[in-house]
Length: 244
Image (cartoon, rainbow, N blue to C red; front, side, top):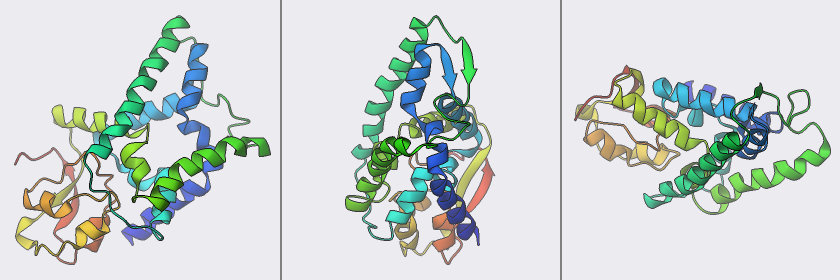
């Protein structure tokens, strides 16, 4: 039932992507920043960072429209991504973009206003047919890597939102903030590796269980491993990170 609910939510989020697309746009943040305006996507990214202090990257596993379409692509391609280096690529995309955003606001003389609906029509991103000229390439950027290369490759290597949540999670751990986590019971594990096969992020779940710590910057807290394990080795919990 838990996974039915999660998959339903994340697929509905994908179906609504033509409406919400601009609220995840890094480009609109720059365009609004030229005039010192805080766009809706800037508010969204700030909210993702704040919530990640308590929920980690659960947004990626339960709400993100890009996650929804990639999970759909996994029906055709379930090849796991095992390269640790692939995860660093997104930071080389994210860092220059953050610097550019800061420079835009500095040149504008600081924040002059807030417009949650910047770039949209009545709050809708793709309100006109020509807006799909933007929508289709963005969708292709998400779908092609997942469909023809590796499962959830966009999340690992391209996503400009993930670094906000990774940094939020790390800060939360540093400050010992109680948050949503996965908890393992090593004594029940039979090393069947079912959990690893279920993980959409291709994480070494079995090794994480063995060390007694499920913390991983690429974990999106989808809970697929908790549902797949017949021994109930992994469960959701809420609290501080336990030292191993």
